[in-house]
Amino acid sequence: MHKAYWLVNVRLEDGYEVEDGTPVRTLTKEYHLFIENGKIASIASAEEQIKDDYDRIEGAGLLALPPIADSHFHLDKSYYGEAWKAVKPAAHLLDRLEEEAQILPGKLNTVEATARLLIDKIMEAGTTHIRTHVNIDPYVGLRHLEILREVLDDYRDRLTYEIVAFPQHGLLRTNAAALMREAMKSGATHVGGLDPGGIDRNIERSLADMMDIAVEANADIDIHLHDPDYLGLYTINKLLSLTEEAGWKNRVAISHGFALGGVTLSEARETADRMATSGVHLISAATLRAKTSLPPLQDMKERGVQVDLGCDSIFDWWGPFGNASITDRLSRLAEYNSWIDERSLAESLSYITRGIIPLSGSGDRVWPQAGDDASMILTEAQCSPEFIARRARAVKVIHQGVLQTKREEFA
Image (cartoon, rainbow, N blue to C red; front, top):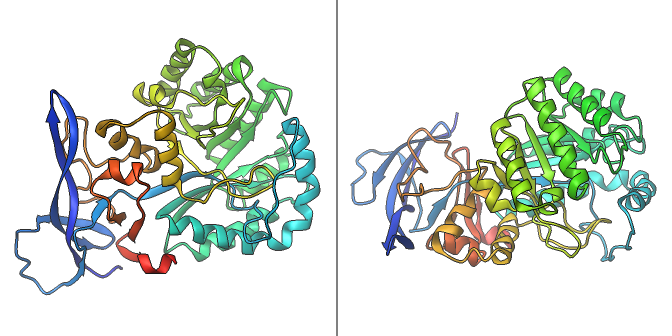
């Protein structure tokens, strides 16, 4: 049981200053939060005098924001911590997979150390929840899963996590169904998939086998879908039909979903409406590169699709970029989309908080509330729009009521 204490003099977003019907500034006020058993038990104005003898942690006027989540990472595959090497160009995804098949067995002895370095780096940026995909394939079997489970268990008091069993080299292409079923009995929390058309070359069977594994394991789904344009759109709609038939509402996510950016906006919106009805999430790595079509994330969000972001990875044989800061990734996405006004920036925070933002559209404070988990970051930014636009750092991190990190530890 966590110790009870007061987090005093912390700023919370409290509304908008509005001009001509448009928010132009986010208003904040200082509050005291009483933390007990990992929850925010009560919230009091900083003007009120605390009369009990519980310990106090000084918030020093820092801004509290909801806990940060990285919803798509590959902790088991990286060169992080090794000497620099750029990526060898590959003409097709299959070429990259062939390269990876040669690399993986020789890196088994580095997976644990690299994963720890990556997690530490991710946490430096204030992230306290990670969804990681873990290779399940003929080249490493279940070893990546076994290693990652042990590593993540060591961090269980500092972050929460999900593990997606990921048939990176194709569910059908490598006959990985048996391994996937074993992975779901060995600690994986989600069933993954990969390009039923472009890699498995049998959309209906690949999706059906993936769904069968998920239903047998009573597990959620998170499928990588790089297949472009109408190939990918057909796959998404087939997946939506399977989701409805299986009763898997609110239990499916599509990672990347590049096809949604390669068809007409009306077609993407029509599919987004189906996704919202079925509770199918979209998870994007905000891949901003030539020849890659980014889905219309804001449109999809406005139509009721939950959209989350992930860093994907940093420094591996797939790409050399990144710093494991999901806030930096969001800031780059906001700049790319010209989300420059107060409301657009404020509402974009939801992409890295699993949908939680401090203020409603009308400017009412909806987070935090008494009874919420006492998980948050504290930052010097004046408001969430500044936090995103200026890529401010998390000065302190509180996870389930426990103060985790101080800024000086980041150096």
